[in-house]
Length: 70
Image (cartoon, rainbow, N blue to C red; front, side, top):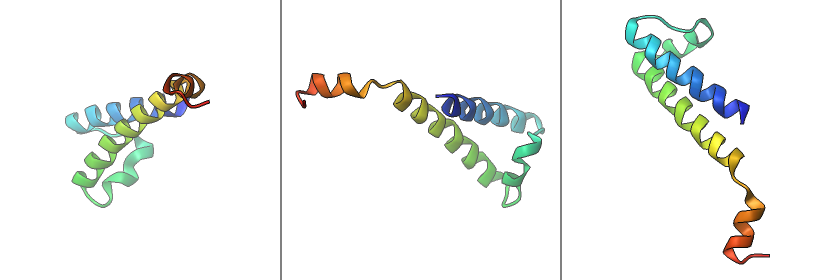
């Protein structure tokens, strides 16, 4: 869950920083192929973070019981 949260936070803040012309020092390698690649990679970071966060919060045992699989 922490990994998903960090991906969302760093992805969103890097998008905001990119709008004002700044960037995280440890994410500079994303700018090497181009700004469009960096933008898409940051969007993917945010989406992956949300997916990881949701999957971590899901109670799989309860889901199985509700669907009738035991």
